[in-house]
Length: 229
Ligand code: DHB
Ligand code: MG
Image (tube, rainbow, N blue to C red):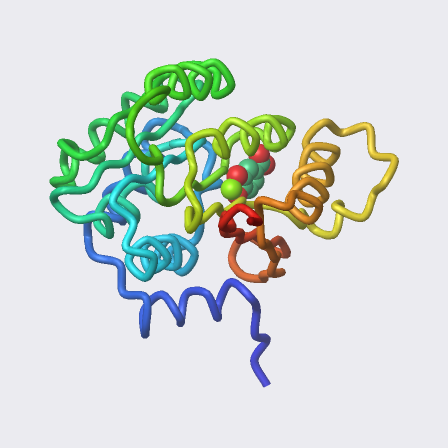
């Protein structure tokens, strides 16, 4: 019988159930044209992010790692016309492509792209939201350098409320998450990120392994708890 691959199944699921519209193909086309790395989430994962936003009633989303704006577009669609996405991108050329993509897809007005190192941008956002009433973000998606994730999580938690959803991409990396004495800063980062979520009394968290066009990986999913009384 024919060989069946994870990538083939991803393609089938994309056609049969996920059904991204042309805007998403345009995002990927412009990313390729700009020779950007093809490491965006799969359409299935992008739509999962959009559905999580919808299910949780998110209006304000924080993304770390914009790239060409593929996951950004899924979440920007999901928050609706009165919602907003703030997305952080370290590479100005990537942010330019994302801006073009999100404007072309008709959601540019609800997406704020912040260019710069994520840690500095997040510290800036914490400052901006200090003293504001209520939490800054309902949903957080961490998908930039994995070495920074422990710090990004702590900063995101300063802008969260009970019920805020936190998703982290790439927490398995072909099983490299098992390498306890890895010297790779990204592997050390995801190990710490998982441990921090597991131990933090403010969070209820899980992680799910995935296979697909992007190989063997996984994501973490957490919700911020009500403080113990
Ligand atoms: C890489 C980063 C990602 O966010 C991803 O989803 C896949 C790969 C990387 O840096 O190699
Ligand atoms: Mg990723």
